[in-house]
Length: 273
Image (cartoon, rainbow, N blue to C red; front, side, top):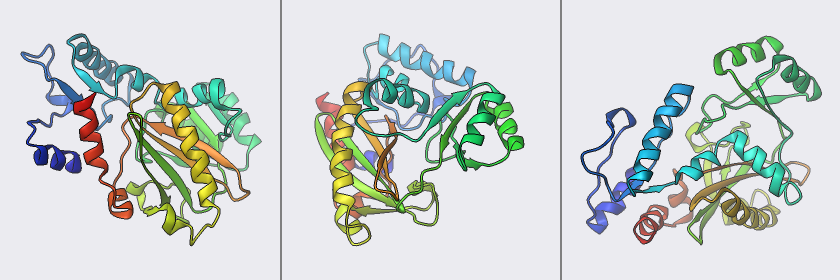
C-alpha cells in the first residue's frame, strides 16, 4: 500500500485509503477506480457476504474495481484447485489436494501422505497455514474453519517463484528464498531474490522460471484477472508444481531485489484500464 500511494502522489493523483469497516453503502458519491489491497474481511461467512455485497454495489455503480468480482471468485485456494484440475493439469502438476467438510474423508487423506498442509481457503501471506500430523489437530481445524483445504507437503529446493502479470505485460519474476521453512512468504521471513541471483544457488532455476511464465499466462486467461501473481514451486526431484495464484499479489522486497518499479506499473495500468 505504501508503494502504491507513493506512485499515486508522484503522478499527482487524488486518492483515499478506506478500510472495510469504514464503508457505509450506498455511498453519497462513488470513486472512478477502487484497488483492493486487503481481503482480511473475507474470512468468515457473514464477513464474506458483507464484502461481496459491497463489491457488487460498486460494480453496479460503474466503478472500475481491481481485481474485478470474477477475479475474487476465481482466486481462493479451492477455486485455484478446481480451475487447475479442469484446465491446467496436463500442463503442470499441483500438490495432491483435498477440500472437504467431512472429517473421515480428511483423515483418510492424511493417512495417504506422510505430511500434509492445512491452508485457510481465503487466507493470505501464509497466515494460518500449518503442517498437520494428528487426527486431533485435524478435528480442531475443522471445528474452527468448518472446511478443510489440505495438500501434500512437497520437498522443495528452498524457494518458490512468483510471476507477476499486469494487463498483458509480464512485469516481474522473482524467487522467495527460505530453505529453513516450508512457507516461502516474505511476510514470514523469506528473502526475495532475482532469478539471476538464485542461479548461484540453483543453476536449474531458469527452466523453472520459463515454464512458470507460460503457466502464468494461462492462469490469467482462465481466471480472467488483469493483475495476477502466480506462485510455483520447484521440487527436489525436478518437478514444477503450481501452488496458487493471487488477485491481490504482494511484492514486498521484490522491487529492491530486482530493481523494477512494480508499483508504478500497477498504477499505470489502473488509469489505462
